[in-house]
Amino acid sequence: MNFAVIVFPGSNCDQDLFYAIKEQKNCDAQFVSHEATSLEGFDGVLLPGGFSYGDYLRCGAIARFSPIMKEVIRFAKEGKPVFGTCNGFQILTEAGLLPGVLLRNDSLKFVCKTIPLKVVNNQTKFTSQYTENEVIHLPIAHGEGNFYCDQKTLKELEDNKQIVFKYQENVNGSLENIAGICNKRGNVLALMPHPERAMEEILGSTDGRRFFASMVTNFGKVTV
View: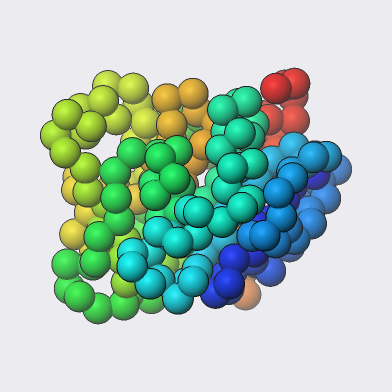
């Protein structure tokens, strides 16, 4: 599989994602500029964390209008894998590919630490190598990770099993401790924590490895 790692002005986790996916068997990755207009030849898309366009207006609000996002939206509609972490999550909600919004942390402070995270749905193509309700450890680094949606949307997320990850301890005020969600089709997923920063013991955790292994194994089996 060949993955596009989208680079926006202000991205700072693109290198992490690049190496995380290239560690997977039979995988390649290329950096793709926010100004590009084609994703021809790619099998999946990764949106990194960072501070796209300096987080002006709202996090992800300007990045959503980058030329490449038309292609990312097309990719998602075709059922191909799209993953966003941190700022990538914010961009995907702004683009309408995922419901809800990421607000300021309730502490109004930037939070940066490794936290326990529960895998509440291991039946997605991104989480199949985890066990149900397994507690893993991934780092967070955000000031606007407070997930919010209205009650109707929350019920839809719960009924459709779109809530994939929850914080064990609510570090930012997120509704129902939500840390990561997917779309109804299951090919678009985003979470605020960083699995790409949990690939080696020296970094404090290897719990991110199975996330990327799940994605590659499952999406590599199907033609979309």
